[in-house]
Image (cartoon, rainbow, N blue to C red; front, side, top):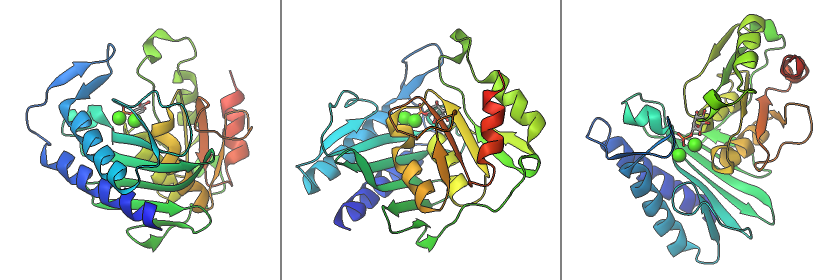
Length: 255
Ligand code: IPD
Ligand code: CA
Ligand code: CA
C-alpha cells in the first residue's frame, strides 16, 4: 500500500532525526505545569507533514503540535514524538506515530521506536507486523498473571478521577504494572504480546490512532472502560489480549 510506504518513510526519517538529538540541549516550552514540548517535537512534525503532503496532497493533517484543529475528512493523524518527557530526559522510550484515517476509519498505522529500531505496522484486514514479522497478542488468561501498563494525563494532579485508584487496584490484582511514558509504544507492546493489557484516561487521537489498529490486527480487544466500542475520539481506552478483558473491566468499574 503506497500510503503505508509513505508513512513508514516519514516515521523512520523523523525517528532517526529525533534519535540524533537525544542528549543534546533542548529548547523546552511548558504547555502546562508538567506538559513539555521541545523544538524536536516541532521539527519532527514539520518533517513528517512535508513528506506526507508531498506524496498525498489530497489528505488533511491532524497532528499534535501545529495541526491540532483539523476538522475531519480523510487525513493523517500524527504524534511526531510520543514520549516527549522521556526524550527530553534521555530515557530511551519514545516513538513516532502516524495513522491514515479514511471515511472516519483508520486503515493504516505505523509506530516507530528509533532507540530500539522497532517498526510496528498494520493495514486494515492485513495483520500487524513488527519489523516485517507478524505479531499476535499474548495468551495469558488470568489477570493475576498479567503484565500491565498504563499512563497518566498531564492534568491528573488537578483531577479527582485521576487513575491513581485504578493504578493501585491493578497493582494488587495483576502481576506487575509499568508506567513507561509513551502510550503508542505501550499499545504496540500489547499487540506483540509483551504486555497483556493496557488502560489509560484522557488520551488524544494521535496517541492511539495507529497503535489501536495495530492491536486490532494483532487479534487484541479494544473498548472503553465500560466495555462499549473504542473510539480514538473518546477519552479512555482499555486494550488487551481479549482473554483478560472482562477481568480488567471489572477492576475499572471498582470505584
Ligand atoms: C503522552 C504519552 C504518555 C501518556 C500521556 C501522553 P506525549 O504523550 O503518551 O505515556 O501517559 O497521556 O500525553 O505528550 O509524550 O506525546
Ligand atoms: Ca502522545
Ligand atoms: Ca507528542
